[in-house]
Image (spheres, rainbow, N blue to C red):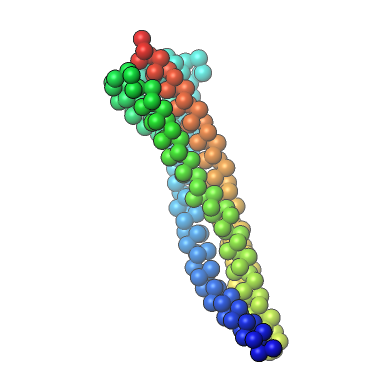
Length: 201
């Protein structure tokens, strides 16, 4: 019986000590999401300014080299790197192009990892931040301390809201950016085919 009480006390101390680290992490995640939101808005504005070109004119545009303003910055960076590769020996050119493309694909997909993690971590931290104060609040209720109970309930509900809000914003950003990444990858593959075809002539 004494051992059981010891275990309960240990678990209570451990769970109670997690409250402030969870609050700190939620605050940190909120700040990170605000930064990502600013970056997302800037990229959205940049993409809105891109001059769309008809699919049948893409080859002509790429061949002319005047692609600035028609593609995203990721595609422009890839095109610049690709043109540098085209001056190397033709025997290793294909493998170099493939390697560059794969590197860029991995790089673009990595940009989705952080927001993807926030989508999963946010609700978990919110739930932990809810349950810990609820436990201490119920203990306060048993002792008749209503003031402590109300204070714990405020923390419990605000952490839930913060965790869910962080997760929802991150999910929205991640979903839109995923579509952008897929579009950029498809365009980079197409540009690779065009440039490599021209290089073989």
